[in-house]
Every structure is written in C-alpha cells, then in structure tokens.
Image (cartoon, rainbow, N blue to C red):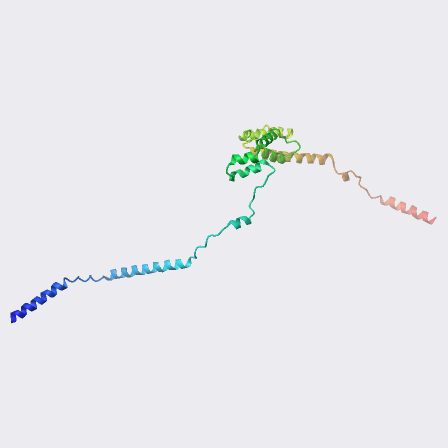
Length: 234
C-alpha cells in the first residue's frame, strides 16, 4: 500500500514537471543608469511628437490654385494690331511661330530695301546731333550687314555728320560707337555756346546804346526860374 502511494505521488510529480516545462528566467534588474537613460529616451520621444503636432497645427492649409489670367489682363498687356514702322512689327516675331511667314506678310522685302537705301543716303543736314543719332540708329536696323562691326558703324556715323562737326572729330580715335556719339553731342553743344556768346558780343542790347540823361546844372535851373518870374511880373 505504501509503495503504491509513493509511486502514484512520484508519477503525479513527474507529470506535473513535464506538463509545466522549463519556466523562462526573469530579466536582470536595471541599473540606475540604465533606468535613467530609458526615461530620457521616452521623454525625448514624447517631446518630438508634441513638436510635430504643434507645427502641423501652426501651418495654414495650402491655398487652392488661383486663376491669374484676370490679374494679367488688368495690367493691359500690349496687343499687336498695326505699326507705322515695319520693324515694330518685326519685334513681335520673337513670340510668334513660323517667323518667316509672318515676316513675308507684314515686312515686305521691297520696304526693307527702301529703308536700307534711306540709311545709306542719310545726312545730318539741318538736324541736331541728337536728332541725327536717333535717325541713324533707327535706320541702321535695316542695314545690319553694313554696320555689323562697331568700326563700320563709327565710319558711317562720322561721314554723315556736318562738315564742321566732322572736321573736329575725324582726327580722333574712339574705343566705341557710343563714345563717338557722346563726343559729337558734347562738341556740338559747346560750339553752340560759343556762337551764342559771339552773337551777344557783336550785337549788344539796344538799351546800352542810349545816352544817359544827366541832371541839369543847379545854376542853370535857377537862372531859368528867375527868367520865368521876371516875365510874369511884366
């Protein structure tokens, strides 16, 4: 009897061990330093999450796309209808496809040739240096082959100046066309100032030629007064 009970108890104990298996060991306890680092990591994670949330709330939502064609038209952009000068139409070709067809329709070759002849026969004449410069630059666009180089442009400009102005500039060499034009404008202005001073010197005002009136001598005035008095007494 006793043996039987012991065997049964032993069998139950063995079955209990086999059914439960080997239990997992507990993790080692954290050191104070490890515990502190873990807390700091958790706090940093929470702080970053709060910052991201605040930034998302602070940024306004993106604006919907806006049609700006109305704003563009309010500025009254230039539109092309016609032009008095053919090259004003030519300026619009930069934004137009099929450039050659547009040029042939609006800028006839005959008109271009006529403007080129006008440039080649241009003279300053009665124009001021400023007016001549503007006309020269306007017509030079029709003769690009003749004035392709800066030196050639200077030669054409200088040859078409009036003789006096040309004589004062022909012995000088200018680094660029613009400096030649500046010198021509300055020289003409200086010459006009000199001529104006000469004219004033040779033709003084009429008021300077009048003789000044000097007051009569006091004695002669008194003598005339006495004569008038004696005549009145008679």
